[in-house]
Image 1 (cartoon, one colour):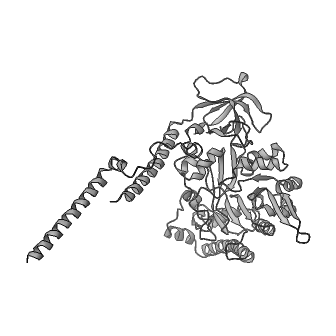
Image 2 (cartoon, rainbow, N blue to C red; image 1 turned 120 degrees about the vertical axis):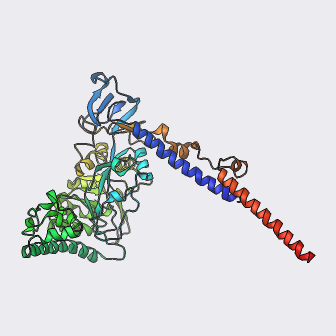
Length: 505
């Protein structure tokens, strides 16, 4: 075996060692965490629920904040570990209102796939979730990408945990619908597919009711034949809910008899799912509002908008739906007549129209939520409104305001400790506490130190090709190499002997 092959194998072993060492370290950290008490101290606490607290203390017990205030007014449990100190600024964790990151792939090949669940696609060891901790993001709404017609059911997660179950905050949370044409298709075909999906649901339900009236028990027998659960509550029927169209007689159909393809859409029409409706241009907005109104889920609709959708602000304000700004904060256009370039600061338009909005990360590779909030303040948005757009407001839009978004008694103990002001370019996220558990410490971030300080993590340096390979402990490869060399020598000896015999003959 040549030295290059040995070096490549050694490098691969080092990479595997680094990866599994990181997993083991994270697992040890999580296993050491308990739901006990913890005290967070900070020279300044930004609660986003009132005035800032100087020299403050936060007491967290069983995952929730039990006390918060100035150090002299808060009794600290004697048996609680203490993190932080006067040099830090405490801040509620940022909330990512919408993203398709952290999955093995953001889109499926199916156009209409509400029967799928992205919990099967989330990758707990994705670098995205690791980066979220570095950015101070503690709550993430993961939804399928815009390359669908009706996507899979989404999920709200925390960016920590070795399994999807550990990460889970809200399972089966919302559905993604896209008004953006799939690649190679037009808006007319996209809208036709959307309308057909709900028309197909109505025809399917009407067909079930008609067959059941003709032959009682047919729906249950068919469900049992297909292996679906129709026991307990699943064996009961109920009249169709919702505020739009209805199918009479649905109460005679056991809910367990409705197939997995149509059940999520029925839940949607009956008002049991939030909808994240993605619009890529102003023309998509009225189409989205029409679909939501026609099928009765406008009140549970959130529009996910690219930056130029501000042109449909009047229609959005009239519909009274909140929005998540998924694109840039500034829309740049060139006047077709004068050639003059015009810039529109999108949050300012939403403010003027009274539209509730949250800001999401434009590009998770290099533009985290703190960057977006800082950029918004630089473009003219007040500091309070910019911070609210990445914390308190997304919590309200997602229906999570009882748990996250601010630092208040009764809410989750999600606290980020910054080395300075959260919107300063020189500030670092030093520590992160999620639901009372310390989950990130910059001092222990080996990948960060490797990137910024050039510190090579122990056991991850590539091996030397010569002497290092002889003592790397891989005795099996050494013996294999020796055996191969021995066989090669023997073959050469036998070949020479055979040639000598031929000459003598």
